[in-house]
Each structure stands twice: as C-alpha cells, then as structure tokens.
Image (cartoon, rainbow over all chains, first blue to last red; front, side):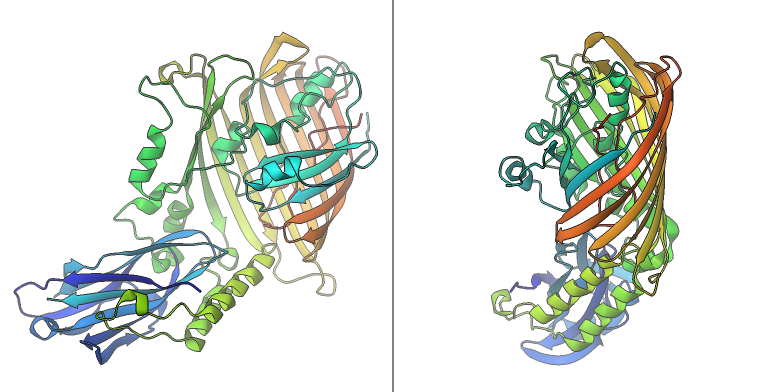
Length: 127
Length: 439
C-alpha cells in the first residue's frame, strides 16, 4: 500500500478582475488521467473537469472569478502512468485572460516498469 | 580453418548489480566437465556462462583498455587465458570486441569496456553538474570509476515534454530519448596514473508507435480502462494529507500487468538507434593531458513482425548492427612492447524465433581489423542456438557455430574468437559474446 503524492499550495490571487482558469502542466512523457474539484471548506462546490482526454494536459479550464475564488480551494487529482522510466513533474497553472498569474508547487515523482503508476493530489487554497 | 564451438551459457537478465558479488561467490552451480563458469556484468545485466577451460599454455593479450569498475566480477573474465596458438594474440584481441550490444547499451561504458555497478543518473541540471564535479579533483586530476548517464533534453524548460508533444512530434521524441553518458577508468592494470575518459551520445532514430511504451495504444487503452474501473475523487485541501486514502492496489496491479504484457511483446515492432562515444587517454591522469583520441560508433536496427508466425505460436525478430571502433590500444601480454592501435569494423545480423520461455536463433557476423597486433585481418562467424527460460531472470543458452578467418600479415587463419552476440530490443532473451574459443 502506498500513499498518493500530495502537494499543498497557497495561491495568492492578484487584485484584478476576470475569470481565473486552470491547467495541469506536465513534464515527462507519461499518461495522465485527472480531474479537478472545487471546494468551499470541506464541501464540494462542483467538478471543474472529470477525467478529460489525456491530451487535455496544458488545456485551461474555467474556474471562477477572482472575487468568488478567494474563499475556495481546489484539488487536481488523478493518476500518472508510464511503461518506461520517466521523471514526472505535475503542477497547476492559473491564468487570467490567457496570462499566467500563479503556479502551484510541483508534484514530482518517478515512474518505471516495476512501478508504472502513481496517484496524486495537487491541492490549492486561494487567498 | 573451421572450428566447431559448443558453448553453454546461463544468462541472467535484469539482476541488480548487488547480485554480482553473490553470483561471483555465492551461486552454487557446479561446472560441467571441461568447462568453467564465468561471471560478467554488462550494462546492469549479470551473465553467468560456462565456457571451455583454457589450455595449459597461454599466449595472449592483456588489453591496455580499462580497468573495470567491478574488479570482482571482471576478474572472472577469460581475457588472457583463452588462447593457445601463436596467433592467439590477435585472436584474443578480436575476442575482446564484444559483439553483444543491445540497443539500450550505454555508449561511454561500452567504449571503455565498463560494467559499472553504480551509475549516476541525474534528473536535474544541478544534479548533473554535481555529478560532473565529482569527475575530477581540485587539481584537475580525473577520478576513476565515474559513470554518469543522463537525458539532458528533458531538462530544457521551454521544451515541451508532455505526452501530447511527445506523441505528435518526431523531433520531440528524438530529443526526449537522446542520452548522454560519461565514464572514466584506469587506463592500465599497473600502478600508472593513466586514466581513460569516454563520452557517449545515443539516440533512437526511429521507433514505431506500438513498440514505444509511451505511444502504445494498448497501454493507453489499459490506462483509460483502469481510470474508468477505479475512479478517484478530489479531497478538500483542509483534510490532512496523512488522512488521504492509500493508492488503489487493484489499479496498480492492473497497470503492472499491462506493462508486463507489453514487455512480453518486445519482439515486435521496429527500432533503429545510433550511438557514438569518443574516448581519450591522459597518461598523467590530468584533464589537461587528455589525448590519443579514439571513438566507438554503432547503429542497430531490429524488426519483429506483428503477431506470431507458424500457427500463431512463434515470435520472430531480425536484428542487424554495424559498428566501428577506432584507435583501440591493445598490448600483447606475452610481449608488453608489442602494442597496436587497431581499428575494428563489425557487421552482424541475427534472426530469433521463439516463445515466451524458449527461443532459437541464427546469427552471423563479419569482423575486420586494421593495424592490429598482427596487422590487418578479417573473418566471419556463424552460429545456431537455443535458449530456455529458467526463471524470470535466468536463461539457459546452448549454441553451436563455425568461424572463418584470415590475417593478411601472418598468414594465420585464426583471426577471432568465438562469441554469441545480442542485438535487438528484447528485454528477456539476451546474449553475450563468449569471448573464449575452443581451438
């Protein structure tokens, strides 16, 4: 039994208006299946995205406005898989109007044929 | 002159380097009559072979090439005791040309004939710089026993390395799989300060998608099925990480099995790779005195048709390799003043048929030597063999073949020693040059 890779970050939002978008960025040519949930405290507000096509890494999904987001938190959770030997780094990128405003701490781990998959949670609290 | 060779080999594949010592001293295998066991390690693979015992008299070469990183394992190599005739010098010299180069061979290690037990594999530029700094002391003197392998293009910040970019762009794949290696070793067995340095560069020039573990649709589908069957859910950021559920063991197990199934098909597909490794020697051991450059270069292509043949029973794979080694310094152990800086060209081919646990093969090779200890020479060899899987890491191999050779300067036909060779992509059935001949 192994624990998922868990990374917690605090994201300070800028003082500007607009809708915040989020994308999962990946380094390492591995398969990634992921979802993103939006929380208010321990309560699920909504699923931002539920296991889209893996090609949707790097694709930005709409969250909320800056004002609405300040009290919320998100969890990007999923599974990474590779049948080869790869060092993986996953992080969340936040943007407003296409301009990156912040990134989460990276979830970094290695995959190899003996241990080809890892689960991960990249969680962020907004302020 | 024709020769019949019978070589029985136990090959172990994918045994951790730590197992070498125990293999050397601990594995309880009784030598068959007239044979002796030989333990070697190459590219992380430990090989235990039974080869003919040497004849009482010996007249052979101790190559000036490098002291191995693993003296315990390498001391068992029959490098200086396999020949009996006056032409044995060049015969043994040729035997030191290892015909067994898998696609995954690390160029710098191959160029220096190393089998490092510990290889540094830095995954960041900082780690790489630290590993390089360990290669020399403050006085610019090279440390021996350095072995580094890295994939530097994966570190470039602006180069996309995600699965989408990898799948869609050839150049992205080429750079992602490009590897750099560096190794140092003592340049002689005596007390001299001479050090060899090798740099290696290798690349996969072509690989079809289905045999590429990162692009295989079979693996991709297996991953999607696991994600559907074992869904995950988000965890609010306020919940401590320690309270998050363990990974789903069934998902892990299913994906491990998918990888295992994929690797069992490693016969199939096409892969073409190339590598080059320049080498230098410093007689003083200092970086500033590096000279006498040489290099080793090779290209390998392997092809296995999809599916199975012969009533859907047998896998099939063909592999071919061209290799050139320039300026390899060799010394006649019977006469240390007799040295040569030889160049060697090898063209080899191999056909393998088999199942998961039993294979047969046919192989042939052409070897050409220039400026060797006995001048220029060339020769051929061919062999047939079978191998049986004993357990996950061990194969029993039996091969028989003939070799033909002639030297232009001495008139001797005894050109090169015997060897099976391994070329191809299989992770399971692996061959190693026998490096020993029954004459």
